[in-house]
Length: 249
Image (cartoon, rainbow, N blue to C red):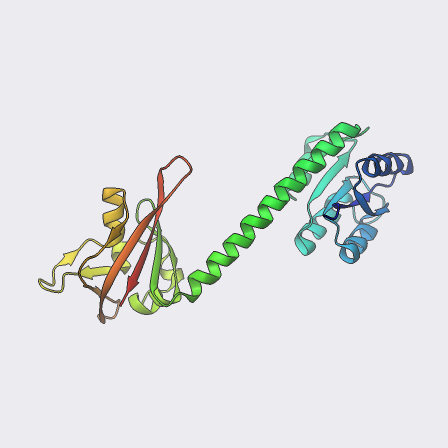
C-alpha cells in the first residue's frame, strides 16, 4: 500500500527541515515543501497530496488560511495548521476552513504524527461516507417505485422522481410537509381515508407492509392503486429517526 503523501507549506526553513525529518522517519511520502500560499495551491493541484501541513502566517498575498480554503474547496484535500499564534481571531478564521488539526510551534514529533494519523483516518471515513451517500442518492433517483423518506415525526425529507409523478408534489414543495398532506391514501372498498404506511411505522415502531391494494390520490385528483411498504430508520441506540416508504402500483 502506498504511503500517504504530505505537502508541507512552511516559510521557515529550519522548521520545514525539522518537519521533513519527522515525516521521513515515519515513512511518509513528501510531495513537496513550499514557502507560500500560491506555491501550495499550485503544487497541491499538480501532486494531489493526501494531506497538507499548512503554516498559518505566510508571506505574500495568500496566507495559509486562504491557501487551505482554496485547496479544500477545489481539491478536497484536508489541512492541518502549523501556527505560532493562538489568538482568537486566527483560530476563528482557521476554524472556518474546517481544518483537521492545529499544531503549535515548535512542533513535537509525536504530536505531529498523531495529528496526521487522526486527520487521515477522519478524512478517509468522510470520503467513505460521501461515497456511500452518493450510491444511495443515485439508487434513490433510479428506483421505478415511488419512494418517500420522512423524519421521525413524518415530515418529508426525500421524494424520488417516481414519487413526484405519483403525488404531483416536487421534492422542493414536499420538503418539510407532513407526509399525510402529499401522500393521501384511500381504502378501495370504502373510499375512506386511511393512515399511510409511514403513520403505521411511527405508531407501531416496526416495519409495515400492506396486504391489500390501496388508492393514492395525487394533488390533481388522479388515483393510483398499489401496495405500500415502509420501514423505520434507526439510530445506533435503536431510536427511530426516520421512515422510508415505497409504493408500487
